[in-house]
Image 1: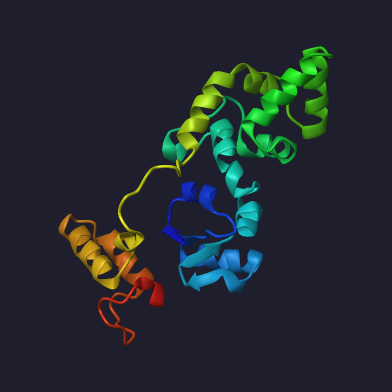
Image 2: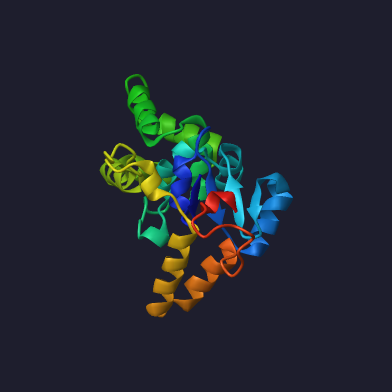
Length: 212
């Protein structure tokens, strides 16, 4: 499981990897009403499975880089393709899962049809304005670059054993103390609340957070 606040990590969710998203209590309650309480880990942590990601984001996890590359993401200063937002591109991504599929379809279509026919067909089928489709097709290089920026690389060689990355109670306590030293008290309090650091729950100090 990936414990995070960052929705960028949702692209890594699959049958073997879930994202435990740290959300507000009210947002977890909203998610419970939509997708069920069985995914609730804590009052402020919700388990994003592949199905939850699809329902919440409108695309499957592996499509999130393509969605962000086209529609942009203000939190990461990614402009996306001008004039195209998430709701505009989502219908197209249902039939053409990835950016490369959209451009391949366009190239294939051009071999036997004028481009105007495809623009009209997509405009009618996906409720996208022709100028938006033109903008998408004309900005292929920009979209390809942004796709690289939005894709998390998973092929980086890691020599350290996995247990070095295990999140323990000791590490969390050290983290909150350092956050407070740097004046990030609010963030420290959030971690304390999320993981119940004020309480021992009868656990030994070195026990993994996975045992909470």
